Structures are given as C-alpha cells and as structure tokens.
Image (cartoon, rainbow, N blue to C red; front, side, top):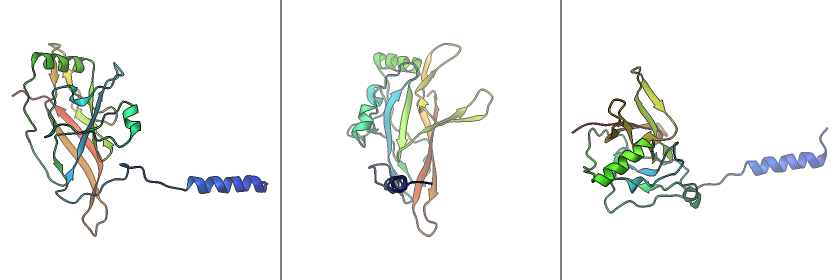
Length: 200
C-alpha cells in the first residue's frame, strides 16, 4: 500500500510532467499553395574529421545580399551548428525543374579545397522547417536508397581515376500533408535531397 507522502509525490510529478511550453522555431509552420518554404544550410560535417565547417567556406551559391545567420538559440552555436540562409527558393505545391541557382567557376585554390573536403567525406546538412534533409540515390544494385542521418555528401571520388567530383545538381523533394481538409494549409513532413554530378 502506498503511503500518503509517496502518493502525493507521484501526483506532483505527474502534474509537473504534464506542463508544456513553446520552444522558438520548433512548432511546424503551415504554408498555403505558392508560399515560400525557406531552406537553411547548416555546418558541413564529416565522420572522418569530427570538425564542422562553415557551409560557405566552399564556393557554393550564396543568397542575394550574402548569407544571414538563422540560428534559433545559443545551444545550436555551442554544438557546432551554424545555421544560415540559403540561395534556394522553394514554394509550396510548386514544381520547379532544372532551375539554375548560380554558376561558379572555382579558382585553383577553391577547387583544391573542394577536392579536400570531398576526400574527407564532408556532407551538406540542409534544413526545411526544422527537418534535416534525408539523402536519396541509386545503389550499386540499381535500387533507390534513402539515408536519414548525416545529410548528403558534397561530392564523390571516382573509383577508377581517384578524381574528386562535386555534386553540382540536386533534386529537392518535399513531403507534405494538408493540416485540415476543409481549409488550405500544408505542413512539411519530410525533406529529401538527391545530389548529382552533371558535366556541362
């Protein structure tokens, strides 16, 4: 039989556990058709070095006016996250095919930095509505593979020539659901990036 003191402690613990609060940036956003869905970029990471690197340290397309910090709190910064705005323009329920973001011809130094980061296995970490991107690609057996951790690689090393290639194209796929069938409003429930390297 529980004592009165134990029972009161249990009730107090239940009451405390049932309290709720809002953490800025955590609540999902609701979009209407055509609304801009902001995509952010986080620090690049590698399982080989354990050192996060600023996304814009490499010659990637920058938003007009330069990248802006988009971190929600100090904890993100302390854990090595450096969330910034991106140059991508994505709109809810709007298909866009082969949209040119920018064209960059890297200098020799920039090309060497890209190759080094590819060699060390650095991955892009993109975010939409606080959801990290999954990566998608075709495996050696020809089957579609999806990976849900660690972003997606910035490039690859060719097995025959050992030359580094940057992924210069990406398909961005958003999964969404309608919040209420009686009114217009959609939430992003999944986000996949499919990187590709295409010679021009």
